[in-house]
Length: 380
Ligand SMILES: NC(=O)c1ccc[n+]([C@@H]2O[C@H](COP(=O)([O-])OP(=O)(O)OC[C@H]3O[C@@H](n4cnc5c(N)ncnc54)[C@H](OP(=O)(O)O)[C@@H]3O)[C@@H](O)[C@H]2O)c1
Image (cartoon, rainbow, N blue to C red; front, side, top):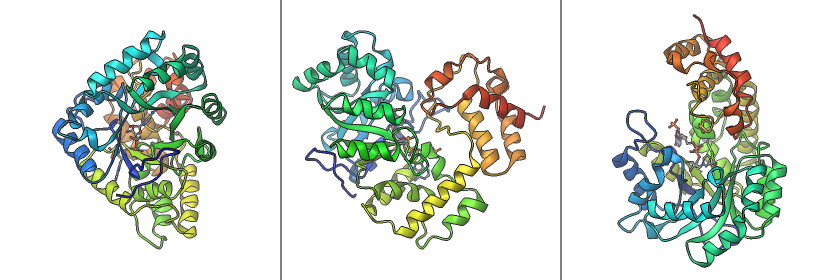
C-alpha cells in the first residue's frame, strides 16, 4: 500500500479508502448485504493496508453502518480511521445532531468517529445546518471525544464549495466527487486545489464515476485511444492513477462490489504516487475525456439519490441504457435492454413531479431526458 498526506494532520492515509456504499447484496436488494462476501472484501482491504473506511447513515437503506460495525470487530476497528456522515436532510432541530450521532456510534459499535462529515452539502443545506448551530455542536462533540475531526461531503457548484470552505476554519477535510471526467463539475479541479491550498485534506468519491469509467470502453473511440498507451492498464487503473498522480488528493474512496475489484484496486494503489504518470499519459486521458464527452450525453453516476421515484420509474437504469445506446452506438442493443426493463419501471410513467430533480447531485434535467430516452428506446 502507498500512503499519502491528509491536509494538516500528522497522519498518513492509505491511497485507497473503502467506500461502504456499493457492497455486494442478495436478491438485488440494497438492504440485504451479502455479509460473508462483503466481510471478506473489507477485511482483505484492511489486511492489505487500507486504513480509511467510509460509510453513511443512509447507505444500503440504513444497513451499511451496522454492517461496518460488524466488520470492525476482532481488532479491525483499531487498524483504521472510520468516517461516517450526519444525514443533513433529516436535521430539523439542534437536538437532532446528538440524536443521529449517538445512533451512529451505536450502529458502528464504537465510541468515536474519526472523520465525521456533514453529508452531501449544498449551499442551502449548509446554511440550514450552520443556522441550527452545527459548528458549535461539532466543537462540543470533538471536546467530549465522540468525533475526532469534522468535514463535509459536497454536491453543488464551485461557488457554494468555496463559501462552505471559507465559512468555517474548523474543517479538517472535505469529500468531493472527482474523476477524469469531472474536472470542471461541482468542486472540480479548482475546488480540489482551493481546499488543499487552505490545508484541508480532500477525499475523493466516485473516482470511477460510479463504475462507468471502469467498464470496457467503446471499441472504436476510447479503447482505440487506450491501446496507443506506452503502458497497458485497465480502464479502472487509468482512472485511479490519474487521481493519485495529483498531490492535492488525499484518499481515493472506491465503492468496490467484488473481491476482484478490491484486489485490483489495492494493487493499483500499491503502484501509485504523485507524478507517476508521464506527460504523454496525461495527454491521453485528456483525449479520452473528450471522446467520452462526445459520446455520453447524460451525466448520471448511478448514485440513486433520485430514487425511489413515486411513480416507479427506474431512473438510473433508463439513463444507463440511453447512455449506452449513445456510447456504444448500439440503439438496437439498448432497445432490447429496455424491453427487459419491467413496464412499471419505464420512463413513460414519469408525471413530471420533479421530486427527482431536487435530489439529483448532478443537476440533471431528469424529466426531459426521460422523455427523450423513452422515444428512442421504446419500440412497442
Ligand atoms: N458523500 C456523498 O455524497 C457520496 C456520494 C457518492 C459516494 N460516496 C462515497 O464514496 C465512495 C466511492 O464512490 P463510488 O462508490 O461511486 O466509487 P466508484 O469507484 O466511482 O464506483 C464504484 C463502482 O466501480 C466499479 N469498480 C470498482 N473497482 C473496479 C475495478 N477494479 N474494476 C472494475 N470495476 C470496478 C464497481 O461497479 P460495478 O459493481 O457496476 O462493476 C463499483 O460498484 C462510496 O462508496 C461512498 O462511500 C459519497
